[in-house]
Structure formats: C-alpha cells, structure tokens
Length: 320
Image 1: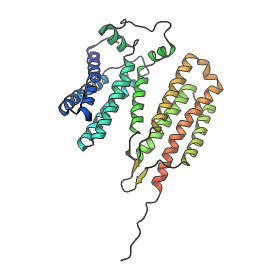
Image 2: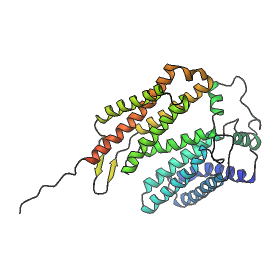
Image 3: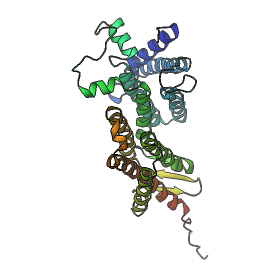
Image 4: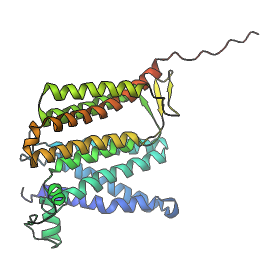
C-alpha cells in the first residue's frame, strides 16, 4: 500500500485525534475544568475523528478477507459515527455524564486500542510513523529471529482483529453502567454473541456434527442453569414504556473478552499446529467452551424476558 494523498490525510487526522483527545478529556475534569479549552479541543477532536472515519471509507485493502475491498476494520467507521451521534445527543439532552463516558469509550477504543496495534513495528503504518517519520526503527522493519513468540503473533495479527477487539470493548463497557434497554437490545446481544461463538466453532472445525453438538448441548444446559439464578439487584421492567432498567455489570465485559480471546487463541493455535484441527479433545473442548459463553448470555436474556412477561401489579381499590 503506497503513501497516497488519501492515506496521508487519513493518517494525519488519526494521529491528530490521538494527540488532541487527552487535552479535551483533561480540560473537562472537575479538578481542572476549563470550558473554553474543553470546547475548542473537543470540536477539534470530533472534526479529526470525522475526517479519519470518512477518509477510511475510500481506503480499501484487498490483501485481507474483504468485500469489495472493505475489511472488518472498516466496521469502526459506523462505530465512530454512531458514538459521536450518541455523545452529542447526550449533550443536547443535558446528560453530561453520558456524553463524557461515550467520548471516553470512543477515545479508548478507536484511538487507544485500535491505534496502538495499527502502529506496531512491522505493520505498514507502524513502519511509516516509527521508521520514515520518527526514525526510531528501520522503515522496512521485520521482526528479527529470536523475537519472543508473543510479539511475533501480535505483529502478524491482521489489523481487522484489533478493530473487532475495539468494537467489543466498547460493547462491553456499555454494559458496565446503569442503563435502560428495550426488548430488541435484550434479545440482540445474546443472539449476536451466540452467532459469534458459533462462527468461531465453525470457522475452526467446520460443520462437524460432534463439535456442533457439544456446542449446542452445553449452551442449552448452561442456559437452563442460569435461568434458575435470581435477577441482578435493581433489574426492573416498566410495562408502560416497555423498557428494562438494568444495573451496570462487568460480567458481560468478561464474557465478551473471553469469547474474543478463545477465538484468538484457537486461531493462533491452529495456524501454528494445524494437526489440532483433527484432535478430538481439542475440538470438543473448544466447542464446549463456546457453548458455555453462549449459554450464559442466553440464560441472562431469558431471565429478563420472564421478568417482562410477568403481569403488572394491580393497585388495590379503596372504597370511599
């Protein structure tokens, strides 16, 4: 991939967003509240993020798995647009806490996580920035022999994987705060993550009936177990608005990251040792583990659906 003017604009805007973001966040802290600086840096950061996301629409990569040149890393584009829209919606509604947290999550996910892995030595942008621009490494840097295995694995991981990780981190973080959610969101989360775990199983071992059977059986059993557990304290359903009131929890974040790490570790293991694909114990253990994650999410959703199906309490009628 050559350093075209489009890539130069994209990279400059991205690096500018990385640099300006902390200024906007710091200027809004209670101990150092500077509204003018916060507003100026904030609008500059939003402009740079929009420029980064918009320019990325026209940058395609046909070397990785893609659809018309668009890879999984391009999923960050709608994430950026959506998070910025949500942040300004919170701002217009006077929800400063929601606005601040949304901006923090976007900076950590898009600029911090995705950006850090994009700039690793050995990658195109990493060699460009650290090599040609800063002169810290050779512009044609390749991981030398003797480099620790974990470093080689990270360097050779496709960029879209880190984009997916950033999106999953944002999804997990959104579950850590108290929130309201409609029925669609309650159902879509377990369906989406269940599909992700099933994809991880099939992409690794194909449509093996034994492996898929272990995934399904484990998911059903775990879901039945979870449905017997009490609801989290503070979980409520308002039948008038058809909205759930949910307390924040770190459990979804843990489970989301567990699914991602399982797929990542299994993928790396199969690349390094392809013979594991035919190893019954390895494939069954993987299918069972994915089933556990899917079952937990399904069970949590079923508990909330049962809560919504309960008849609303009726107020006693007082005789005059």
